[in-house]
Length: 575
Image (cartoon, rainbow, N blue to C red; front, side, top):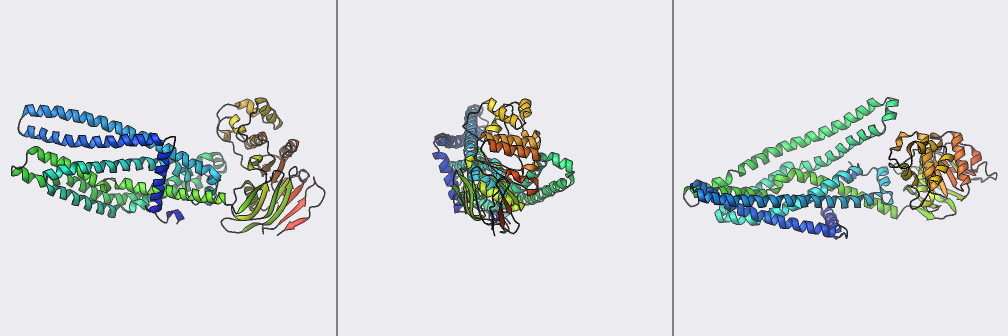
């Protein structure tokens, strides 16, 4: 069981976080005043709606009495009053609904932007992806926040409306019959207790359902995003089995929800039907004895049902409440994970020190975050700006060192001295080009820098990808996955060079580019005074392009030797 799934409950911590979010929202200088004004008007409209309902109960009473007494003139007067009350109720209900929806949308936008800021800050999105401690954080931000804001606002308004309803209609029932009021209270209390008892498993099941639905959708997205390699490799059957397995989990859990709902619906349906006859059974004897008019009977039924709707909030809304509890638990787990990721980023076990003159590793030890295996033990290496390095050897150790240099590896200790990250460029094995125009894709690595089309085209010619610019232009929206892997990688190189980095790091460039193209790239880096560090299989590289070679071994030991650009022996090794 995942740590976040060990409990699903409303506790003090969750309540404090909820209150803090509301305070942050209402005190935000951009949207706080607007939110408070809209909420205030909603409360006024709810109060008006309940007042009109009370007036309507008396108008309805007199209308039914006039019908029973065959008093046409009185019935017509009451009909006119009825229409006025209905018209006013319609206006109040529609305006209140509009304010509720716009306020919910405003809150959703604000909370989503806040969550995205925290998700993207300190590379928390990467840390969560690597740890896997919170499944489907994207769904929680996109869907759960929407459910949270809309449902919270709806519940708050329902509670306020129920409070006004109790105050308004308790007096009506007490005026008709104190016994009827007592029956309403006892009936609602018993119904709420039994509903909680029968429906409590829904909280856990709804929580699981959200994750299982997200896992099924994620597998479908994986199929769409990897359609070509899946088709070429003939991997449809394994993907089909995986999709069917995910679907079976969705269906199995939903069957459990249906079974709980079956028991719950037997009770709540009967409970709601009985509400319609209880007030008449209590008030009818008064009418038979001539102690009440016929209209009082209908008024009592209407007031009783309205009051029961307020008292029976748990009965009528329990399925929504159970889903809401699951959403709160999921968002609470996401918030805790983001806080933990932020704390780890602010107090890293691997210390990063800015030094514009070199790249250096001092007593750097890296471990596997899952198994704890030592990947690199006490690495010491100094690479002055202007020199080049080839890193070869154990693939896991290479990957860890690249990520530690970028500041996204947390398992280990030691120091890394490097220029500011904005002066470093990293080219992963799988190139990444953000969606949008080619200009945006090329200039996203150098914000605030004004580069002419001529400069961009000149670099494209040097990289022999000018045909891409001629085909698409710089300002056409495009999904750049339509390009070949080599073209994508060269565009990524162009983006990196346009940012004028001091050091550039390449992860297995030979997987996308042929050796001659890689050699040309390294020559271009030297021409532009960019130091480069290449992480690659030694057999794939020409040692003439490197000053030093770092060999990482599977047991965590390492060795530094001179490359063929630098004839003097470094002659150092570590373990």
